[in-house]
Length: 457
Image (cartoon, rainbow, N blue to C red):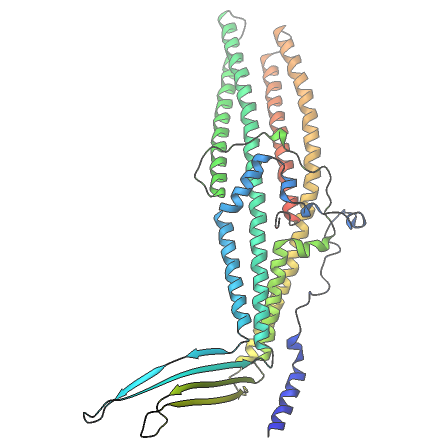
């Protein structure tokens, strides 16, 4: 009989060997064509922009200090660390599941019949139980828990990368608002002086009432715009403080003109996204977890072997005399083979396979989304540079236009409306230059984040 059982078990193990296979990355992933308009041969051996430490990308010392502070005090970052610690504890529990469980359950009784002398009995048993992992149920559970740990690590890295990018983006937003407020303040001073000059000319009949009212209306509009910029500046500071985990206060900062980035950068080969970008790694670990869950569903069709036993000391062995005591030993082996479980095992396997396919589709879509973000950021960086150069040229031309309009206005060869139009155009162009400088910083952050930069030190 024992030989028959052994033969059946060996046959079952041979037929179910696939449940012991480790997860392997699926083929036919859209990796080679992820990056558009990028020379793969040139970037194959180069260091990716996303591989650079964040200290080399964001070179402003004040910004670096804010990022360090945020990494230590941001509540989302602290929560991610705690989630990672939970996953590590679960993996330790999964590793210990291969060992026998031991239970100490001492018990004692006190018995007296018809008022006679009380009889004291006691037992000190130690019970052990060990599930023999013949068909990979525990193994796949441990592998799935390990994939969950890697998933939480990727999540923690994603939070870290996003936090660095958000702090940098908010910091550059503040610098942009500082530049816009400075331009607005200087323009207000010029406009106030112009209104005083027009009012003086109106008194002596050298200017019309219409020119004065137009100048005042433009001044009031500029004051309203300036006030709105001040509000945005205060809100940006409050937002950054909340992100850093501190109460609202003034943020020490430099200027937008002082910001520098690496002169040259490479995207690297698209395959690096599979191991560098946290959300891609997280999606793959979700797929791996689903793979091992499917293996667990398969192993549920096979027998479950459990060995249990107990050993202990008792002073009651069934004799009339309860002393002296003696040892109690027992051992049990149980083999459970599911036969009919109302279709639950088949349904669980089908559900697990579907979940695995869903995880695979999500993994492919995450990879496509990552490639899109890299492509968008690459083009946006170069586009912002071109726009900045064009608006800088526009500013130089409009500065000459304003100088000419002022000279013509003083000699009476140009109307005040022409001068007003030239100054408004120059103001708009200056604000566009500041906006382009900020956009350039913003797109560099987006590219760095899209390549998985800042996820690790």
